[in-house]
Length: 332
Length: 290
Image (tube, rainbow over all chains, first blue to last red; front, side, top):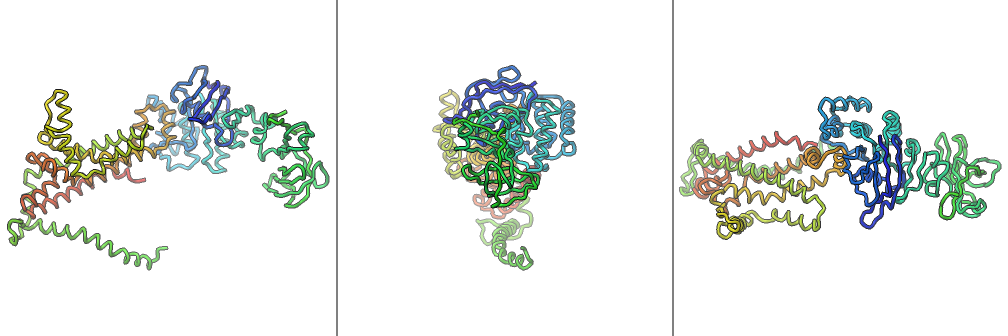
């Protein structure tokens, strides 16, 4: 069980309205990712749900019960912090056992649960070490272990992978996804990295300046961004946003076309331009093409597309995949 | 790169300061050891003669010695207990966001800047005086008989005065330790269901272990040699009730003019201080390892 509903939740720090008002439904068993640029209020929102910050207005309902005023420990949620927040003077075993010890569970039961969690997370060999003797990924797993043993209604992750190196991050991303498959517990995950959001989420919540820009499945957001912000934020490299005559001809203030939806040719096409930068990644080539009257466009080509600075190329946008936005930035 | 050459050059350069420091330590120590084996009384100059361990046997068999030893340990232990418990309590309070935090912190630290003689005299005349003192006035206004602190509980009075001086130091160290505790750890513990007391016992106190160790070690060094507070308040009395080892050595040398006996006492005090130091380092030194 673990459905969470936010009704009209707002948060004010002094003069600053960090979160004006948010309504959100999180269903039981969902993997929800809050994503947005830094300072958009996503961590604050998570801390409001956790109870580490008091809401300035509105209501938080967990499993049908009003938890707005409940203490963090009473909400039945477990949190994994960005810094892991392991207790440095305790062994891995005591770290994982700490929430159980606080709940006055008897010793044998604690041992059993800790050993189970350690087995799931491959930590059995490290149970008697101190956190400082572990690598970053292992610390991360201890932090997750400490959350698992409580069997919470939902897990809250606050940018848990940002302190790991790139290779480990990919691994942990998979492990967390697998954990979600196994446990089927609600998870709320905060990140600024849209790749993490796209790969892990059942439902992505895009936040900007304390407002929800759009809620939907990763592919929904990719296919039908509700506004310019989401269009620019989701997808890598960013969507090309074109203003001016071309957009007006399509009946919009701004037209958007993703780099992967532009056809590339050396012979003929709608636009012609000059390559300014070509980034060869092996599997893909990202090219920045200067097109007169349109601006600089990012284009994705296959890895074999040999092309260098100064080359002349022709581009053809796939107009069925064109996104159109009005002068308020909303999708048409 | 530390080549043999640079290393010997470094030794050469270091030598003067090392020799100076060593001489500064070894000359007085050597002279004290030498005097401790002499019959050396300031009232009979020029009549020094070797007496072997006689000074030591007199000093160690003096009933005042055991009083002084107990008083020294009680003084150190009492002040440590008050300053550490009080220091943690004050640090916890000062860590809360309050109006006028900066001023309050300066006020708390202020006693540390008052010199020992002055603060002892202030306590003696303005607080503990049975006629004019603030404490006597409080006792009288509540209808009790005022207590003559320095006469009836002299050692406790000295402990209170010294603890008052050292409380700011302990508070300051504890406060910095408290402020270096990761906020996320406290939040994690809160989410793990730890109440205020559990958080304090399992998270805050272990985090402060190193700071507590530092306070114990530094304070012990200074508390073993408390002198000014005793001299200006009780003069070690009544009897030997508030005499510690330092004061006993002083009394031996400058009140009874017995330099030999005082030197023997000094050496005994040095040995005792080393025993305490070894004991402490064994007991809590591991907290200082990273």
